[in-house]
Length: 490
Ligand SMILES: [Zn+2]
Image 1 (cartoon, rainbow, N blue to C red):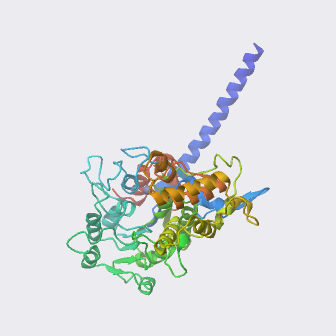
Image 2: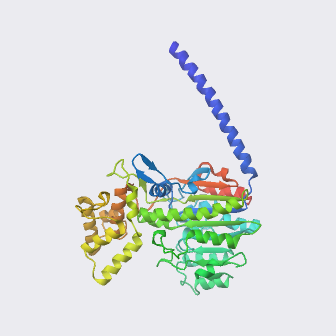
């Protein structure tokens, strides 16, 4: 009886507490709704880290933090300090491990579609309108699209193109020229010569100044007209180099955002989307250091937008999110248990792509041996053979890791890369470079579960006018719908 009474009292207390809690929630929800209803941003920045979720952002924070026992600390990114944070679910109509075409379509346009489809619904026919198209047509805003990868790749294309297959690069490029958007910048174009005319010529005929000259790009301004600024230095695949491989003079994402503001700034408004596209590519290749450095480059680009926001308070909204996670990256690895040693990753001096190129050059010169590989591995990743004297202990390979590298060397030499085991080990990448990044990453305490995308939800960071709208957990289509409402477009 006594027990029952106590239980009753506790229940009453709980109900009362919940009542207060619920009242508090209702009040703060009402306050946020009122703020959001009155918000009217006219300068909107949308940053998308392709393949960037919490593991990627936090790895970047750990990488620059301290790993000393008793003083383990993060070095925060700029955008993770934004006051409003939400989380979006990324599944598309095909899968819980979606692709960039469908997820970017959801982010830009507010509806679901199949993997591989850009700017069209699940019927692969019905085209929707993107936030960029809406603000341009309905509000007369200027629009800019930046990507570190090619500009007719899935994510940037999802802001201006409507096409059933992301692989129809030439047709996507034609739609880019027809978009009438004011500023394109970053990588070049995939399959630019696959039609009657070069896509660059098509862009010029549509009134764009197309330039890859550094000085010309750096002198662009509001009077430059419609511009396509191509990075003066590109990789063979048309993308900007990985941030870790960049040289002093190379233009960064931050440079292209700065120039974007110069070109787009006007009294009416602008929308600027900037994609860190190679975070995803490094995720596919399980190269944590390339991944982290490109996340840091995206953060630097966000800083430029934030400086603008400080100068234009009450008018600027900045959103930073990803389209999906790539690689099944995580902090923690089976063999390292509760230990992390992220500081050893500072020994990596180049991306897997640059290392692949170095291997190719050695092969070309006929000087590629396992001994030579060990020298190169130490130079590029800091890793040394078992038993090496006077080496950083954390970077000395154990016998298991050394045997893995020997197998990778042999598999690369014999072309034994097609079996089930090899697909698990190498995922279609160069057996040697992927084994070296795996060894270094695992020693540091980073695990990878995939060479593809995963279904991990993705954070949304928001700053500025209307930013409150982005708190909560919601579907990725809501990101576009929230923008439509805030910008007051239909
Ligand atoms: Zn991807």
